Amino acid sequence: MSADRKQPQPPEDGAATGVGATSLLLSHARLADGRAVDVRLVGDRIEAVGTAGSLGPVAGGARVDLTGHLLLPAPAEPHAHADTALSADSPGPGPYDDSYDVPCDGEEVQRRATEAALLQLGHGATALRAHVRIAVGRGLTSLDAVLLTRRSLHGLGELTPVAVPRLLTGAAGAEGRALLRDAVRRGGVVAGGRPDGDPDPAGHLEAVLTVAAEHGVPADLHTEGDDPVWLARLAAMAGELGAGVTIGPCAGLARLPSGVAGRAAERLAAAGVAVVCLPQGGCGEAGSRGVAPVGLLRAAGVRVAAGSGALRDAANPVGRGDPLEAAYLLASQAGLAPEEAYGAVSAEARAVLGLPEVRVEAGFPAELLAVRGERLAGVLSLAYSRIVVHRGRVVARTSAVREYCDSAAALDLPRQARTKRPPEPGGPQAGPVVRS
Image (cartoon, one colour):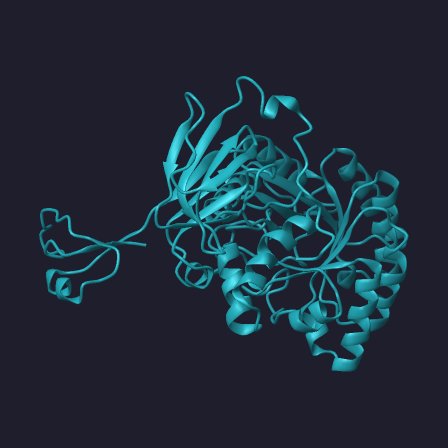
């Protein structure tokens, strides 16, 4: 972490730790540094952290025993696609660049967007940013559906849509520019764009950044990042925008000569432009594959976060939407240390979304993920059982139990429970149980 990391601040709302605030004690958790601790949450903040067994719950508060779990800052999802999620096997939106002008069923979009958000929440992502298409034939129908999803998820997680028009330049782009302005006026919407699909990518970029500046919102652009001239223009313009600028998935940057890519990365870093890579697969176009050059970008000083991208749609029919899998792939294929890889889906992802930092220390937001395991590397490899905490309360649980037949008892498997249960016909014969 950088030396200029912000120190914990007291809650702005006194009610968060005042009389009547909910409380939760997470007992006997293990931290990434190896310490065994109790963590007491009051309201939406971490109130205290002490050695295991040293803290008690506030009167009337709940307790969760995290023995055998690693407690981490919760991950965030910086690049999802809510309007196409879970559409691969059902009638609905087609490929990203072919269906902008096709009318859509807002109720169906809301249903799939909600199911996808809950899936990602169950994996641990308590905050999500989702790209949503807007255009002539569909207007803001999909965006309004995702905004309804956001309201329905209140208290479970935070969902922020990115309004993504197709055309913004020339006479044909006039309605797109009007739609984008209308979209961000709805509140809580990020100004998005897809310059690769516009005949004038530089003009598209200027239009998005202009709207973002007018309304004081961040800008998030979906691009392959394979045009160094356009990247230089982006870097030059981004410095003038007060709000943050994010681009992704930028897989095309990896296809540029290393010297060209390196200079582009240095310009992005100087302008404060963040990059969201997608280790789990293509996003936006079915033929788009590859991952941004994470090592090159990080070496240049670019903030690099990792997202999930397409979730079982035309671009990726097998997407999982799991931030821990994204971190696993960064560690196994991009050469990042487990701590750096997890940081890309947690601290860096939260920074991209403009969210406050989370540390397992008093004063920080109670946005946490407990995963059964002892070390971060093991958790990234086999992250089955999870407990998700948002705003100081448990909002999702996933529990996995693996069973072996009786002959496996001689293996003396670690953490196995000796309790037996009656055998099921044709099933394992009362063998050992391993909780994962």
